[in-house]
Amino acid sequence: MSVPSVSTRVLAGVLFVSAAITAGLLVSPTATVAAMESVTTNPTLFGAAIVGLYLVRPLFAWPTTPLAAVVGYGLGVTVGVPVALVGVVVTVTPIFFVARGTLGGSAATATTATNSWFESALGRTNSVVERYFTTAGPIRGVAASRLAPIPSDLSTCAAAASGVSYRHFVIGTVLGELPWTIAAVVVGASAGTVTAGGFGELGLALTLACCLAALVLLAGPAYRVFRTQPEPEDHSALDG
Image (tube, rainbow, N blue to C red; front, side, top):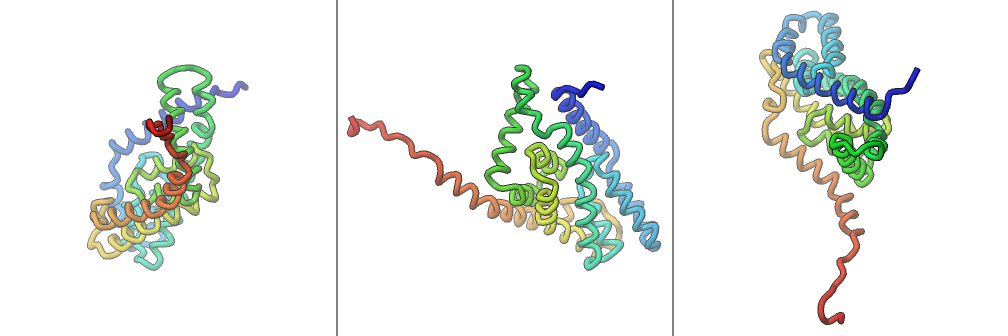
């Protein structure tokens, strides 16, 4: 059995992500999450429904925040926060390994194989992502990307493609998702009904706070990179 070429694997990964995004646009989490309210009175059914939601979430590229709010609504804050964090790790794991198998370490080879625009763009993107994780470090880099208000699966694919180990990925994910998860669980626990408002439920203040935390995490590595930049040569007339 022949092994698919690098280009074929990369194209398959891009098509998979595109299909997930399209499905997410067609299947909104709002109605699905709202239906959870009917089973919150039955712990067994609610637990099974939560597991099901976290398992199917990657297929629709849903954000994780509404699911954490549902967990808070049904389980409260004390139990809801650790359960929601475990759910985040579980739901991003398939995306991580799919991206690792299709995108990881493939861009550099692809750009030398042909000069197509797609592979060239992919190679440049992969180079930027690798420099980011090399400079920031795997755990710090993943945590900062989770703190920033960018799509969860985009952060996952970037980490997988750059060669971040699964252990570092999990640690960074838990650290970066912690403030979002706590806020979403608190919102869900205090809500009168199950809601899927996502980031809008958490407010601008939390978004700004998480962005600031991400900048603080990256300030040290950015400063070290700046310090190591070579001094520009002075070509003034005084130097002859």
